[in-house]
Image (cartoon, rainbow, N blue to C red; front, side):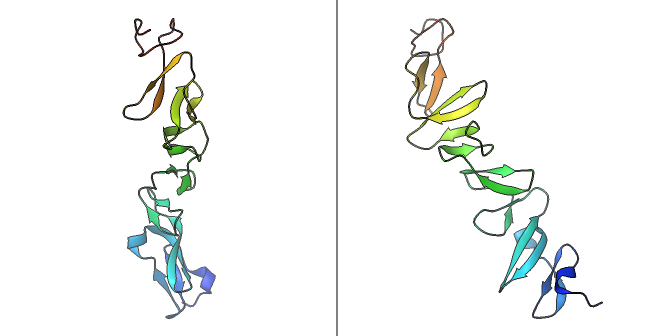
Length: 148
């Protein structure tokens, strides 16, 4: 059957050299793909893979400073202060860039310049994390009741 270049079924692309609808290569994890210049690129990823920000291929993982956007199966960059994250917002950091400190509260986890001087202490292992003092302490060296 003859079809227009844009009418190839999902999972195939219009090969301009053979003039046939050709199956997307399995090594780039595409559900849908297209021929672009001299390269085959993904336009939609198979389930469980994510479109890389560095190129139109799909992978099961994203770069360390990106998160897996399950809504559109793509890798999305973290907030600039986050080293790792679980969404693009500034309150979703899992770890921070080298000069920042991670602090968590009821609204999320943030990267900040320095830990607050009261109510927190710096726990530097394994990540630089601002830890809350015990509830009755103004300053502390640990989270316990007697850590003043």
